[in-house]
Image (tube, rainbow, N blue to C red; front, side, top):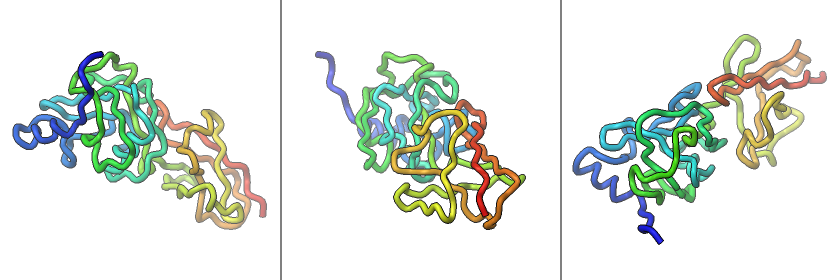
Length: 209
């Protein structure tokens, strides 16, 4: 029962004609409420108003599309339940069902604009590689994210979170610290700039000489 679900692309065409809907490029897609432009609550511009995306059906595949469209690298996580705070205004999209291969979010099937059964405590988010930073030796650096199978324990070791869980990263990826001298530091601390807008602390055990 009920009306059939429609892909987003018809509204993209409407946008081209009348400046409405979701369009690739420009500022019609953004991640808000996070530590930077590559991690946060997913917001889309439709009918000249910014709105959010419900987490019903939201997946790592959808986050992959968002991260790629924003030029933020691979998707690491697709959190829901308003991890970066509830948005305001309309909830534009619900039941977004991406495969991860779409060139833009408007290519993913979803409910028609504005049709949803959600509230802002279900706002979807995305965490991309470009949204991860680490604090060490009084400097913010970008970590190297490698497939787990290629990690070299002789060069660096995975960071273990003090809080959170292994689900913090996408399957098959580990977080590494690279480029440090081969000596035992006084203690290396790192901050992963996500999770409710705060920096969740990760601590790496001291390296052996």
